[in-house]
Image 1 (cartoon, rainbow, N blue to C red):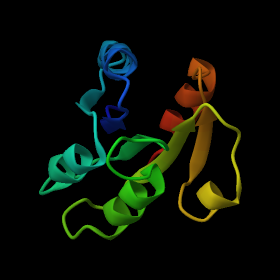
Image 2 (image 1 turned 120 degrees about the vertical axis):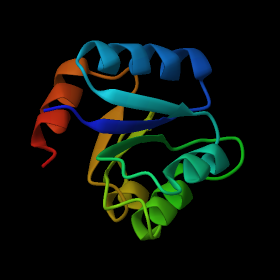
Image 3 (image 1 turned 90 degrees about the horizontal axis):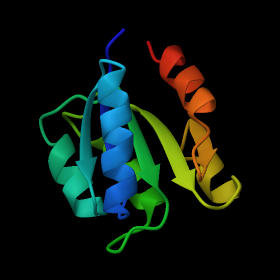
Length: 116
């Protein structure tokens, strides 16, 4: 099943690499390097899943996730926190899943397979 994925990470090289890997798996993937770019990308586009870095230069990843959840045209994407830190109470109420950097690609594949 091909998914429409939004990758939100200020580390452009890591985001671009993840985009390439997802495209090799026949997913459609788009990168945003700031929170505002992510919100702009989601305007009028339904993403199946958003991988959101928690530390962005312009706003916290939790704020991005909350706005993606409530955006009128973003559908209801599965939200995955991506961070160098372990999951905590801040992410549990906002995100569906948490991936610690460096990303375990087998864990990511399991998450992608669970998207309906």
